[in-house]
Image (cartoon, rainbow, N blue to C red; front, top):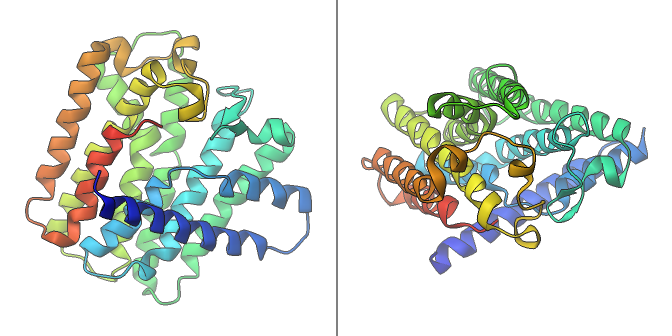
Length: 296
């Protein structure tokens, strides 16, 4: 990975970290334990891939990183909320997230549920009050994010995942599940970043959507690979957790080599979708490569 991309990645991570910290710490102290849980869930690291995509997509659409600050925060809050709920005893029952106790372990189950609820609502509020963006664009952003976070996205993906534990899925069913559970919010991040420019060329916007669809799936393929070959200290959660739960994975269907080949194929497709973009999309290209090269 190039030094320039590493610097860019760290810059985006630090930028969204500061913005999230300011947003969460400015909340009124109605329920301090709840607010502490929200802060714990949101500020203790993470790759920040979704905000990174917002920023890189905004630049590819010809605008500045600053214009994407609001949507970058919003998608990360949705992601953090989803992780809290995914980790709950009724769902994946995980003890570790990002190398630390999950929210229901660090606090309690009821507080974890409420913290996830509050983070989700805060994400939509942030977009609703982006006064520098035209109301019709904000409405489109809200429609995209609600679809990605709800029944048409993450929630159905999680439901399919939950129902499929211990069962077999074919490749098409597995890709459908992951395009909803993981890919929908990744796609939304790219779309929201592009829309933060205030305008978009429809053909280029469609190319960005297809790019996002590819990297959304490649992200999950790489997660499945890391569940087998990664280690707990590096990936920040229990290695082999998916295998232990007998979850359907790309490894189970394709084998390790087949899954690695699939990840590379998806990366190539993603890069092809950016063929008509200039150097402003270089960070999107680097992100596509980074997703399948990461070890956590």
